[in-house]
Image (tube, rainbow, N blue to C red; front, top):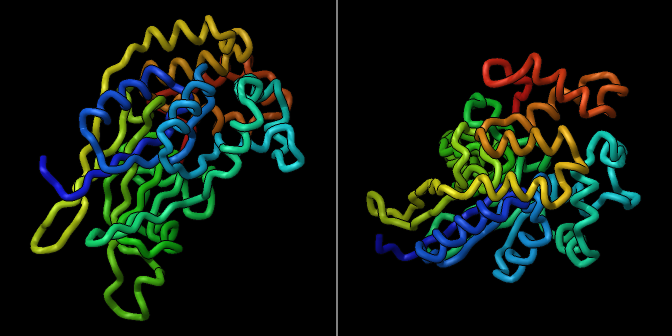
Length: 306
């Protein structure tokens, strides 16, 4: 397609190098004018250092995801106490040990959000999860009132976020926004999520990202989304979980992450939602906790609410 501008958006890579490489190959073919990252670049897969190296070499702007923030603050005074518990979060500590001080500084300095302004195009606002926090997100099935309240802080016509690992394209009317300017005609906003490169939660395990083309519609310039889906070598991921030492180090947590990557189902985050409400002893014993979780939860009964 010939268009005046094409942009690409990648989110939630989670250190999955084979998935990222599939996306990079497609991006090179699609030839976007610019590429932007929506956070959670690392953790849960064995290739954290490789992924950071590639992304920094490409010099693509990125916002900060919750995993990026947690890893950047781990073993510092700013670290949240629960994440200091290696028994509960063995994969986070394993990943931190793979990172250099330079990597950690890069992650720490990533901005919370980014504004993209291009002459003749509707502006775009990027953030990872919610406008006020990278630790929660906007799920596709969320009700209109909830979403409108969550995005009211921004007045850009197009918002692009990640975190939920689910592709999304929906339009909402903000409940309260500077864009209203006191008028009775609030401005609609389009909220897009490219899905996850490395660990989708929408039942499709393929690597997922978003292309936006600037096109003319009804005399006005607007953004046309194209949600990309790419096959990649899952067995290479499974093999690296063993050979890297990640599976040995992180046990049931790593196995659950691998299951998530294989199925395209939200096992990893759903377990974390469930276990936070369990007794302290169980939270610190992931082998037992994962076993108990799998007995009662899954696609027909998720604990995860967004």
